[in-house]
Image 1 (tube, rainbow, N blue to C red):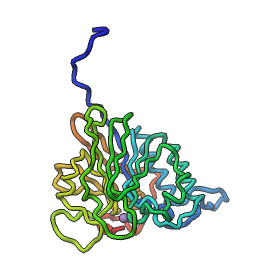
Image 2: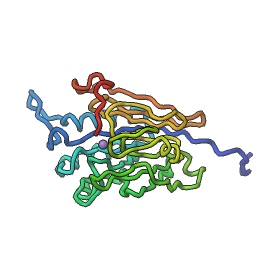
Image 3: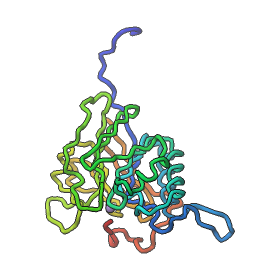
Image 4: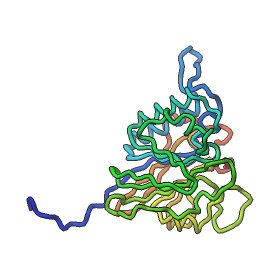
Length: 272
Ligand SMILES: [Mn+2]
C-alpha cells in the first residue's frame, strides 16, 4: 500500500543493554598503565577489566551501556587516568549512562565535575540526588536514577521517577540505583533499597550497583539485578528487552582476571 497510512501497531523495538557497576577505577593505582616484564605498557588491572567489559558489550552489539555506581573508587583519581577512561568510553561508540555511587558521588570535588572535559559526548552522567531522566530517543529507552551527591547516607530508590509518558518514542524504562537491597526486612547497612521501592519505580528493569556479585533481587515481578564487579565476577550483565519480555544473562570475558580472594563469589560478597 504505497502512500497509504498504515494502521499497524508500532513494532516494539528491541533493545540490548550492557549493565555493569562497581568498577572501582583507581582502587589499585592512579597510573593508567603498568609496565610489563618485557618492558611494554598495558592498562592497569581495573582499567583493563573495564575495557574487557566494554569489549563484551561491543561483541554482543549492545545499544547502550549502563554503569550503576562506584565506577571510580575515590575522588583522588588523577586527570590522566580519567582521560584514558574517557577514551575507552568514546571508543565503545554507544551511549553510556553513568550513575554516581557512594565512592564517586557527584559533587564539586568529585571526578565528574573536576574532570568533566575528560568524558566524551556519548557519556550521560546523572547529576542529581533528587533523580534525573536520561532520554535516548534513537534507541527508544529512558533511564532514571538518583545520584549520590555526598558520602552521607541516602535512599537511592525513594523518589518517584518522572518517566517521559511517550511509549512510542521511549518504549523501555531502565531505573538505576546504587545501594543495598534489603527486601522487606531491616538492615544496619547504609543506602538501603526496599522491595516496595523496586516496585514503585515502575521500570522494565532495575540496574543496581553496590555489591560485587552478580545477583538478582526481589520476587521476580520486576527484573532487578546487580551485575557484579568486573574485577570479581570477570564479566558483565547483558539485558535483552523485547516484546517477549526481559532476558538477563551474565557474560564472562575470555581474558577475565578474577580476584583470587573472591574466587567463590558467594562466600565473598562484599559491600561497597
Ligand atoms: Mn557502593
